[in-house]
Length: 635
Image (cartoon, rainbow, N blue to C red; front, side):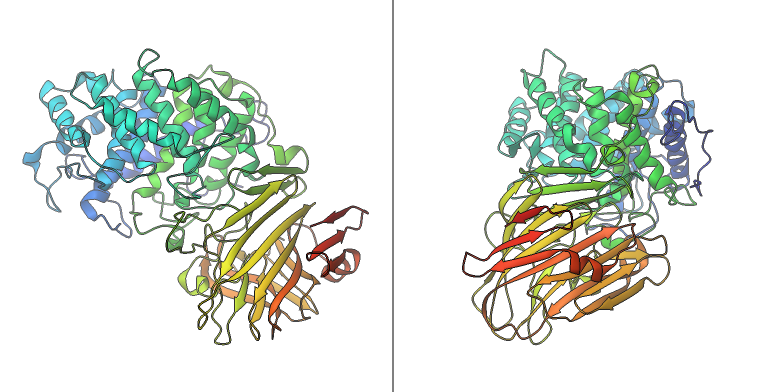
């Protein structure tokens, strides 16, 4: 596919047979993004006030965000080229640092000075990017700043010392920023640094995985924050100042990276799960960090193939846009992908995905031939017990699917909520959840629901993992319905077999409710094709991405298709196939569904006839599934 809004160098199919991309492509992409920001700079370049919806922090904070996050990108570009870049790039950011810390330039909408660092303020997030940028470009920017400007920068950063952050990945913003203060001989708190690094130990759950704060908070923040900042801190602290911590961080990142490539589809798309997906390229940050910290288990050619494939995936789908900007969304502007804290410059945390530019041009990651992703080699099944996920990829269509039995983004106790980017049974590289408010209210896709007589569906809020091993994972959630004080447990088990998911639900429900289960929502630029029959339904995009659900046990013959408009990050028209059983008798029951997401042609009735499913109510509700190839699984 061509890049509609970007002029790129010629591809190199000898060095990069899978993507065609080289270091020159990454430099061109970085340069285009940086140049496109200039028209939106304030006169002294201290802020970049981009068009789009403002965040809850306001326009001035958003302007600082534009400076900080783009400075991160600029710093990787400058340092990676040894300073051999357009001198105007260096001058712009040096000027921005000078202006932003000058209180005489005025604050508020009419000024340019940055807001002060106060407890739990958005400025803390952005300060960390500035600290990293200053460290990486020290010979070209910091060392050449007037001493009075250096003092003002130190004074601004000093708002961190003894300050309070939110108790999650934000602890690391304080760690990095105060380490920068230490590196330039300014006052800082070693207690703050040690306290932040000690705190993330409480969130390490093994196998290279952290949770982002207390709770089961698993998403891309694990790679682009929880692994990234400790190792960037170590670059600042140096081998004599890290107290031996960097060895631990390198070992953990190495563990994490052994399975991380399984999250990426053959077309370069990352699995569409979790918050802040508008950061896009940032999903590649941990693989670059592994190479930069010399701790990666991945072949150099695989590191580049993964990262270049992801960048190319977005570029070919119009990112950056015709203005050269990164809009709030996945491909084009799509606000339901974002959060209330997201402002128009938030997507520029994509800058983390350019970390590889710090690797010299003669590093093997740039010079070795590209290697295939796992999904390009063979069928893949990967169990990740720490987050409670199964990953399975199919090479014939390049799709990777994530089965979610463990991440809910809720606190461990107290009130719980649901979010379309965490609550679903499954996610993939070819689909996105129906996340617009009008669709989320119905919550049909990849969800088993009890539906009250007034049409209100139950939600999947707090997820309780049960098991995750091989090709099988299980969890429980407690459904709530209007008019009932009690909760109704639903235990769900997923069995993987080829491109198929067998979903076994042991449902406890009151008399008279409806049980409903939806498959993957598929989306397109035009209306999605749909078919349905007794006990099955399917939806298909023009490109052939097909989602189907087939009743194997416990369902009525009723099926349907839920259509939505402007509800999905993958396109304005979307549709979800679903099964439904009305008039539940009350008590316990077993519902078994075959869910399919594929580029293949699907024949639902043939699948229904070829897969045997026997539920034994007298043996704890055990279900025996026999596949067409003779394989059997009992759950």
